[in-house]
Length: 185
Image (cartoon, rainbow, N blue to C red):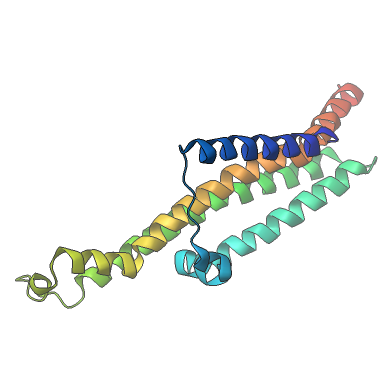
């Protein structure tokens, strides 16, 4: 655990060095879009909408389970069954991030398609006037952005939280399992 801050510091240092070299050499150009920096909550709501509630509840559950397992691993009288139960809950919570992303993808796609088809009669009536750009605008504003954003966010969180679990609990959890196997072998 003591080497993790050093690893993070060196990673940030190398990233800054290589990014600076890329910008200086002209290989990379950085443009900042300030609106999302000024109002990140509006940015998140625009992209994730009400999936924020599900993702937020999962983040809270994930944090509680990490803290609970950390506490139990520090105690000497912890039971393997209880820790194993919390480990399965933690794995299920992480997997649920993927599930919420997939479910909200389906919700976003359905909403986008329904919005795009709203007001169109069987003969293609009002869509002919709107054209391809109008259809695309209806799809994106109707839910396509939500579908894509929740897929990416759910997948990203799922993989990052797996990695954080290994970093935060892996060493203690492995030691506990090895200790249990030698004592009860």
